[in-house]
Image 1 (cartoon, rainbow, N blue to C red):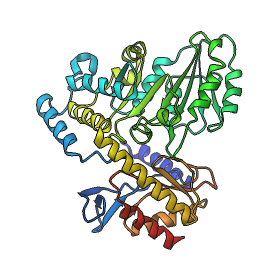
Image 2: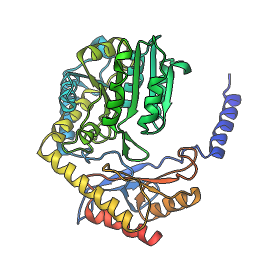
Image 3: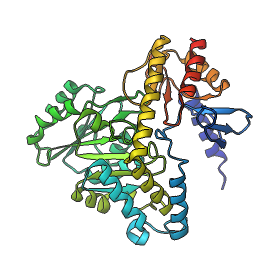
Image 4: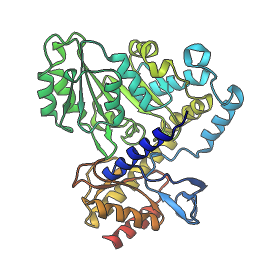
Length: 407
């Protein structure tokens, strides 16, 4: 047997992705971390380079990954429980840190119960399997994350039982809800809290008003599901994300531990009945190993920090640096999308100019992500910057000064 024929075919498929502009660039390898000093935040070393880089493309919004308390908690848990769980959750793979983390997450997002998965992506897939049935209708935002799109497919939702409304357009949402046929038993209305390519947020209050007008038409009502992976612990007065910013709530909350909390894993939070159904029905929970005890213990500490005085300080620093960067882009005449979140898009609106500016940023020691067609529509070519709490005022000024020279 040989992979020669398959390898040739796969090479052609990858070449097609490159021609379409969808292929991923070669992965850079981080080889070192340099802690903050002399008024500047952390820097990173890359394989093949002898310079230091500032990361303006990291999801670690509260900059907790290197916090000594997290590292100590992970070390203690791994020594107490081992490096891996050794089994799935229902076959004695549940350890005390799993239970403690689930209780911590539920408290943080204000829900009766929660269940942790090994990623937010697998959380979303598992929830879709749990909620889908022969008379379930799904409605989602046009700019939903890939995990939501893929979740509908994995849950085998027929095209006739799903609809997509225009991004953040509640009038279009209302039109689609009104069009759901009589006799449908359950409607799942699903969206991102923060849309990760744009940094804008779902209008929860307006969504809730639309949903309320249709709630009584269906046996199980209209269930709102929000993936606030980029929002939770990253913005809002106390870090509760999009719900806190909008002053409105959803029925089911999905989030990640791998962004603002700085660790790893995902979670779903809601009623006790929902969480038990997830435990019984979600394939991506039942049939795969969970987080290790070290990840859970570090996450428990991260949630505790985010919910305390130090978390508030980091959140305030993050908000200040975000305002500094957004205001600086505006002063330089760059176009962005307004919002309070530390995802800050710079709209270049040209593929080659976007790629050229990303290259110049890299040469200047700045890591940022360029988004071009077909990732974004033609004319919406963007550089996505992500501000972290460990960025200093000097860091932001340095990046803005370079962008000013490049404008």
